[in-house]
Amino acid sequence: MTYPIRPIDESEWPAFSQVLHEAFGWTPHPTQTERYKAETEFDRSLAAFDGAQIAGVTSAYSLTMAVPGGMLSVAGVTAVSVLPSHRRRGVLTSLMRRQLADIRDRGESVAALYASEALIYGRFGYGRASTELRFRIAGARSTFVTDAPRDPSLRLRVAKPADVRGELERLFASVVARRPGRYERKPQTWDILLADEEFDQRGAGSLRTVLAEDDHGVRGYALFRIKSSWDGDGISDGTLKLFELEASDPAAYALLWRNVLDRDLVTTVEAERRPVDDPLIALLADQRRLRARWVDELWVRLVEVDRALSARAYSAPVDVVIEVDDDVCPWNARRWRLTADPSGAECKPVDDEPDVTVPVSALGSAYLGDGTLDERLAAGLLREHTPGTVRRLAVAMSWSPKPWAGLVF
Ligand SMILES: CC(C)(COP(=O)(O)OP(=O)(O)OC[C@H]1O[C@@H](n2cnc3c(N)ncnc32)[C@H](O)[C@@H]1OP(=O)(O)O)[C@@H](O)C(=O)NCCC(=O)NCCS
Image 1 (tube, protein in one colour):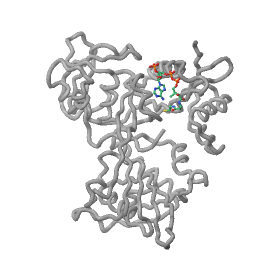
Image 2 (cartoon, rainbow, N blue to C red):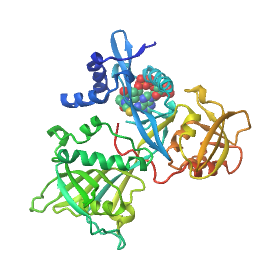
Image 3 (tube, protein in one colour):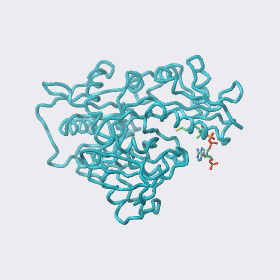
Image 4 (cartoon, rainbow, N blue to C red):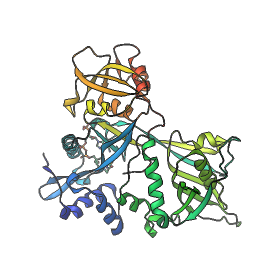
């Protein structure tokens, strides 16, 4: 059975979002629905119809995302949902194919998403491209290595997030390009991040911020909630839930983490979204106090392999013929010569013998600089024809710092 697909207009938003609520089993407050509506790009919001009923949906945000060496227009795929009554009939498959074609028509070469389940998107050519760590630090105290940076010109300022929103936005904008995967935030994104109604708090208290600054201005901030609690003996057992900690330099970074870890009446610090190379790991004298869980974060799809590979920078010279397998976007399925070095890159169609054959998802995984291509070779997931090629490609495509978006879209 086929389900005709087309973009919605604004009047169809209630029916569109209802599919999402049913698929996720989510009951948002009407205010939350309005916030998501404000973020939605209706011309990029596709619905699959069963007669007059919407059976499945997907949408995309027009993101400007950091990639190795620059910023790129990327489709941020979101709101993927199929009604429980219509699942496993190919609705998602048709939506994905249509969406990838639309993304290509718009001139974007890369799509990215957060997956609700890791099993869904590999079949559509997306590869796991970044990892987030979830920290739990019990008995939190900032016992840092003795040479941790300190800058006496820095001071801390406690403020209500809403009162300092402009300062948070400016600081974030100044660091966004530093790490692949981070993306520029629109005002609506900040509205959601700083939202602080009772239903946003989920029992963890109001959103709080502390800024690090000197006489020249703000150098960092932390955004968090504190769930205060006391045991039966009157001993405090509070949990600080950290949402974001950004800084322009290592000394401000260390000072903010010290403040987060040294809070009175807080015994546990939980940070949901941290990069795999978080400098905190190097700062802590006793790393055993930090328990980290490893979760896949962004999934990336190269919609046009040549344009995507030419649009990023490379850490080392490489000249390689890559044969790409891609049955969802057949225009990618051919041989490409990638010639790149730290000063620039070119990717051209060729008929030469390939050095390596890869599924397009492997290039998506490597795109933001995760550096895991050779692990895929070791796992038997790539076919190397010229020995050493994958190692060279893995080094050229890896990047520091490691990719991380840090905020679900
Ligand atoms: C995930 C979801 C969108 C799939 O929609 P669908 O229309 O049932 O998917 P399709 O029928 O097109 O399935 C295509 C293939 O993906 C597989 N698949 C789909 N969802 C899957 C899942 N959650 N886990 C594992 N495999 C899945 C199907 O089995 C099918 O495999 P096949 O090609 O080997 O037969 C739908 O189940 C849903 O709305 N889930 C709840 C919300 C959600 O998690 N959305 C994703 C947000 S990131």
